[in-house]
Each structure stands twice: as C-alpha cells, then as structure tokens.
Length: 170
Image (tube, rainbow, N blue to C red; front, side, top):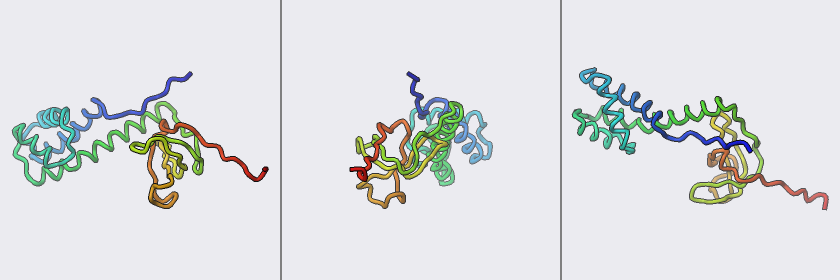
C-alpha cells in the first residue's frame, strides 16, 4: 500500500517565512531606525506564540517589544493573516508539484466527504482545484444553487465515490 501523503499545514518553516515578511514590513515602517534583523527577530518571537490576526493586537505585541506603533503599523499588521494564507497556499502548491499529484475525480461526480462541523455528507463535485489538490463540492442544504456556491475540501477528505444506478434498464 502506498503511504498517504500529508497536506502541508502551518509549521515552523512557514512561520520563519512570515516573520521575514512581517519583519521587513516593520523595518520599512520604522524607516530603518531599527535594524532589519531586529525587526525579523521581534516578528519571529511574536509570531512564535501569538496567533491573533488582528493588526491592533499584533501592534500591541510589538509595543511590548520596544516599538512605538501607530495606525500605519496596525494597518500593515492587519495583512498578516493574508500573508500567512499565501505562504500556506504556496507550500501546498509546491507539495502538489514535488509529488506529481493529480485529482482523480471530475466535475459532476457524487461523493461522500467529511466536512468540518457537518460530518459525512453526500456532495457533488462542482469545481476542480488541481493546483492545491482540492475539490469544490455542493450538497443539499448548503443554501445556494448547485455550482454557484461551494465548499472547498482537500482531496484526502473524499471518503467514497457514489455510483449512479441506471434505472432505465429496469
């Protein structure tokens, strides 16, 4: 049996990348008054244990680290969650490329999948995201028309493929 590959999730390497991005932004904000390495080090320390995506809360952490934040820094730090999401997406895309992964299912197929807070749900695949090994699925009760709104799930969350029974031969 082939070992199941595990989708990349937030880890130390990604946090280092984010600390570099945030540190550079803070360094630019303070007009290089604080050396870049110090800004990156502060960002890394703050992001090591602080998961709040709120720019104001992050600015308070930088204040505790000796900076004098203002509204401009808060606005810069409000983008941290966006940067974090981009880093994770890039790692997932590289994981797909490096492992030569491809989606096996197509639009229109019915599947049973595991959806957070819903459990096991029968769904229809309405969109493919091959670059991130994800499917867009629609299910009854989702609240939007088939194909217009969908939930994105990782391919690894497909539990089974439903086969259509052809009633015309009966």
